[in-house]
Length: 421
Ligand code: AMO
Image (cartoon, rainbow, N blue to C red; front, side):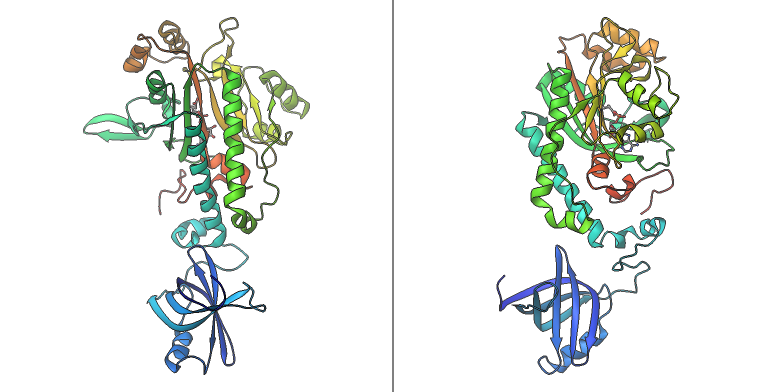
């Protein structure tokens, strides 16, 4: 749009400032903002009196001429010929414009209004880029995108964290992950992924837990642990590059200045991670998983992503492969985001694909192999060695966008306390 162009814009009225015979309407459009400058005498009396009636969040249509202006804050302004109120607004219960945000619980209560704020919109435009970039990257690497069932009959990530579904009188659950299904598909396609919601009935009220979150779930035949680490590293860097290309203004709105692709990643053994933590005063024994405090302390030591490429077998899920020489170790790989906003971004690893070993492993972990009927059976039919990972979309956003709490990365976050709106 150049100077003096006829335009029609739609938007919400943010402010109307009147200075004598001139009024400035700041309009929030779907993808930015516009200033409408109304001069008494130059517009019809009807239009001038309509300006008097405009209130915040009125949704209006403006027809006029767009002109460049060196004094307007946006460098341009619209001189209106017609303004039409399409939908008026009640006064909003939260301030959508001020620098000071409403308290988080209040923002959530009115989330449908909160998401109109430029900062919130910036987060979700970036999320849109992230989703697309992940898809684009994985397809480029020869992965086939599939959709797996959301209503399933088995726990995949621990029985206590299931949301039950009454499935015509039978017991079913919301999927905790695509784990069993993505593995099944790898024998057919070789390289598969899905981007889908996961549901965990965890009563965790932390800065990094949601009860409904999205995973980039990836599985590949014939991969090494190094392949899995490289793939994830390149995936994350591709996402970062795309965000930098497509969301410059959004990053500015969010005040994120130092996002850039990383020059590499570190690999930190479980034992080394224990050492770092002990040096920092944590009392943690070999065999324990890292709690929230430990994780925070660990990631703050790093300024680029790192992988922990093995874990004690006793604390890893049944589907991870146990080392053939050292049964205390399982080939689970966690990818950790670095820095003050760092969190675990993904878990993954090599899978057990020999049915007898898998059965024994389930028993060891106190699971009943009988309840994994089809999943165990499928490994009897020429199943290729494979591995994969599940990366949390909101977790990744939390680190990249420096979000204090993960909930800000979900349009309508679900927590133990919140299921509405
Ligand atoms: P895991 O349970 O570690 O592994 O989940 C994978 C990733 O999903 C994210 N995540 C969460 N994000 C927000 N809120 C939660 N409550 C939450 N729980 C997990 C994290 C985590 O790293 N099937 C395996 C993955 C695999 O091995 O392929 C799994 O689900 O980013």
